[in-house]
Length: 532
Figure (cartoon, one colour):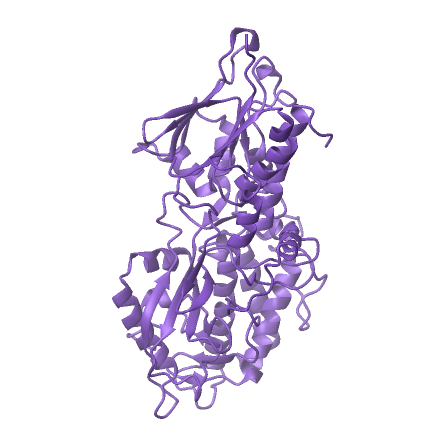
C-alpha cells in the first residue's frame, strides 16, 4: 500500500501565499515531507502588489512603499536581488518632493506661516496617539482619558482625539479664531486652519484605509509597530520581490485562474474514522475540486467579510462548510477593512515641463459652508489632499483617494475624471496669469474595491475591535493545542495568513510576509521539519 504524503494547498499567490510557499517548498517539499500546491483566483501572481507602466514610467497600482528599511525583510530581499536601483525612472524615485505649495480653494496660495503651525500640530497629535511622543507640544495639554472624568475610558477613535487636539489649539490661539485673513476672500483664519487640518486627516485616511478617522480605534493606534529608517520605493518594482519568492517553485506548482467558492472541512471528525481521505475539500467556480490535509488561506479580509456575512446572495462567494466558529466570524466582522485607490494622470503636452514644472500641490478645500464652495469641484475630489508628479521631472501625476471617494472614483469613466480633475486643478491655479489652465490627456486608476478577488485594500483596527480580534482571525482550525473539544480532529486543517492576521504589522506587505512565514513554520514544526 502506497502511503499518501500530506498535501498542503495555499489559496492566494500574493505576498503571504508565496512567502509561505517559498518556505514550505525549500524546507519541506524538497525533503519529501509533503506535497504543495498554490491556487490563485486571478490571472497573475502578486495579489495587492501590481507593478505596471503608465506614460512611460514604472508605477505601482497597489503596494508602493517599504515602510522603514531597518529590520524589513522586504528591504533585505530587494537588496539581495538588486531591485533598489534602475536605469529606468520609477515612482517616487527621488522621494517626496521638497517645498510643497499649499493652495486653498479658488486659488489662494497659502504662506507657510499659516500652514506650518497646523501641519506641526497634526504631526504631533499623531505621534502622541501612536506612542512616539509623551507630550503633544505647542503648549497643548489634552485630557488623555477623553471625558474629563479620569476614569480611563479613553478616546474611542483617532478622529475624536484629533478633533479635541484642534479645539485645544484654538483655545490657546483664541485671538485668531474670528480674524480675517487678508487677501483670502471668504476664508477666516479658523475656517482656513480647520481646512488645513482636514487636508492632513485625508492623507491619514489613505495611510489607514479608514473611510473616517472616527472609525479608527484610538487605543490600537499605539500598538501598531513601525520599522525604523526611511521609507523607500523599489526601483525595479514591488513585483520583483514577489517574483523572487516564486522563482524557487517548479513550473505548475502555482495554478492561476482557480477561483475558490467553498472550503469543506471536518471540525469534529475522529481521526481513526478518516481512513485515507483528506479532511479538507476545496471547490472551485469552474466545477473542479481538490482535497488537502491543510489549507493556508491568504485571501483579503474583504473577501472573508463578503463570504461570511453576505447571506442574501452567497453564490460564488468564498465560504466555509461548516461555517467558521462564532469567535472567528465575530473577529472578521469587527475588524476594519477599507478602500484606497491611486489616480494617475498624464499631463497634456500643452503643459511645458521645461518652463513650469508641476509642483507638489497640497489642496485645501472648504469644510462645511455650501455658500462658499466652488460648485465646479465635485464632492469626490474634496477629500483628496494632494496632487504631485511621481518624481520631479515626470509628466505623470498621482493623487490618492480613500473610502467613499475611492469607491466613487472606480465608477467614473475616464472622460469624466479627466474633465472634472482638469476643471478642479485649473481652479486652484487661477492665480497664475496665462498658465492656470491645466489639462490631462490620459488617466489610469486602481480599482481595489470592486475587484472581487480583493474587495478593498487593507485592514485597520476599527472602533469596537482590538488586536485580540487579529489574534482570533489568525488562529488555525482546528487547533488541538487550544480547543480540547476538537482534539480528535486532524489539526491545522485551515490556517490563516495575510496582512490582516498580523497583530503589529497589519495593513503592510511585510506584515503579509511575516504571516506567511508564521503559518509555514507552524506546519513545518508539525511535520518535524524544523524546530521553531
